[in-house]
Length: 281
Image (cartoon, rainbow, N blue to C red; front, side):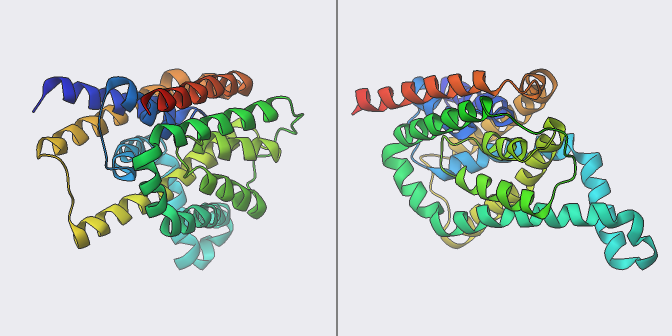
C-alpha cells in the first residue's frame, strides 16, 4: 500500500463528507479534487457511491432517533389499528419519503450506466457544468421572495423534492442544494426542508449501494490492485467522520439561509473544474 495514495483517498473522503452536508455538490468536489491531487480513478460511479455510503452511515446515526420513531409509527399503523391515530403522521411521512425516492430510483436504474460511461471520459467537465447549474439555481433562489414556515410535507412537496433529487444524480448538481431549495421555494422552514432532504437521501443511497452489491455479485469487481480496497475503506472512514463534524460545525452556516454565498462558490468551483478539463485536454 502506498501511504501517499492512501492519504489522497482519505482527503477525498473528507471532501465528500463536508460537501454532502452543504448545497455545493459532493460529487462535483470529489471529481474536482481527484484532478487536483492527481488520482487516476476510472471506476466512475462506483467510487462515488462507495464514499457516499460513508455519509449515509453518518446520516443514519444523526437521525437515529427520528428514524426509530418513524419505523415504530409505520409498523404501529400497519399492525396495531388502535394506535393509528397517534402513529398516522409518522406512517405518512415514511410513505412520502418513499414517493420522493422513486424519481431518483428510476433515473438511476435507467441512466446510471450512461452517466458512468460519460464520467470516465468527461468527469471534471461534467461535474463543472453541474456545479455551474447548481450555483445558478441557488442564486435565482436567493433573490426570490420565499414563503417560510411550513413544517408539514405534502404529497406534492415529496414529488417535487424527489424530482429535484433525480436531477442531482448528474455529478456536480448538488442533491442537498436542489432538494432543500425546492422545499424552501414551496414555503418550508429551513429545519423542515433540511430534515426531509437528508432523510430522503437514506433510501436512495441504500438503493445505490444495493445496485452496486448486485453488480458485484453478477459481474465481480475490477480494481487496479488489492490495495484499493484499503483505499476505499479509508475514504469511507474519512467521509463518515467529516460528515459528522460538518453537521456539528458547518451545518449552521447552511441554516442561515444565505444561499447566495453557496451559489457564488459553486459558480467559481464549476468554472475552475471546466478550466482544468480544458487545460488537461
